[in-house]
Amino acid sequence: MKKIVLTLFMVLVLAAGCTTEPDINLNDISTVIADKGVELLEENEEMNRFVLEGLKATTYMLDNGEAISIYLFRSVKKREQGLADFNKQKEKYDMQIPAIFEVKNALIFYWYKGPSTQPGQYDANIKEAVQALYVSG
Image (cartoon, rainbow, N blue to C red):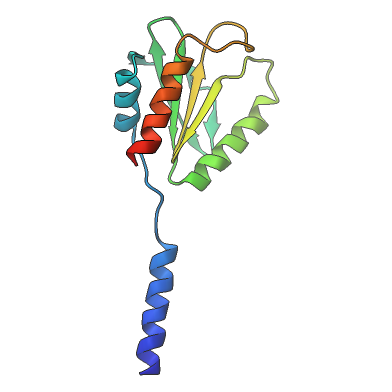
């Protein structure tokens, strides 16, 4: 009997440790962003300057010449490590920092034009999309 109880306890502990955070995928993100009024045009491989935690972004051009880069990590923890990696890498460059949005396992960079002290044209739309993605999970 003790052996059965111990086995059940171990199974429950393992099952609890294996739970995953709700993930989102590229289709989820691109659909919600489009629903919020931001048209994602063709992918742009040339904009993929940063490899974060071994992962390249999918980068889309926008109708105004700006861009959105989307990184999809295996977990929220990996996403957090990816952001830390970006923060470390950006120190090497004299550049405008993108608006950064974090949602579940995704990291979204909005590469906008204009002064860094002001939001980009689609900043509010992307914020709404991120909020919708949090709610959807």
